[in-house]
Length: 214
Ligand SMILES: C[S@@+](CC[C@H](N)C(=O)[O-])C[C@H]1O[C@@H](n2cnc3c(N)ncnc32)[C@H](O)[C@@H]1O
Image 1 (cartoon, rainbow, N blue to C red):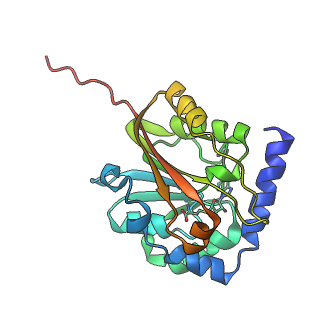
Image 2 (cartoon, rainbow, N blue to C red):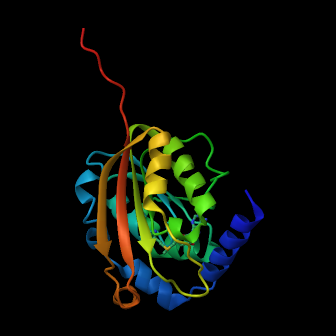
């Protein structure tokens, strides 16, 4: 990966490493039911292999485990992983220390659903496109990629980059995914509402092979 992307990612992760108890409590206390309302009907109904990228404290991972799914949570910041293990010890979440865009430690795994909620804006444009191609490659046939893309300013110590929705959809489509849903929403967090933050929710699916009945 190029040095500019690397430096940007390092700055973001240093910012999250400095996140204190207040940020952790606020992030972990948000309601996944409220957050995922734009795509809730698309989430797997039966037990599925789900990958949560940029999982922070595992709030969403624990929610999905409670629904009967097997969840791998990727979080590169040690204090957030440790907070997640403390806050959700019962959840049976499989934690991995890895990072987008390349996810070099993932190995040859595939998932029925991949989530990237509020993480791609922390990568520059080159790394965002690489991340989308990498995530597409982790989907089993019929698998679903859900990405929540944040637009707007962020705290100075956690750099953000613009997200070109059309460019990322094009990369996903070139990687074999079909666009299932695109929804624009506001933020549920008052401090982000004050900043004018908006979100684009994308759902993209890898086609399942046709079953031929003889
Ligand atoms: C805004 S928080 C979102 C957390 C959670 N997904 C949510 O929806 O609340 C961004 C998370 O992405 C993680 N992150 C930042 N850069 C990352 C990267 N390059 N790869 C993986 N995770 C990253 C941060 O450490 C943080 O936990």
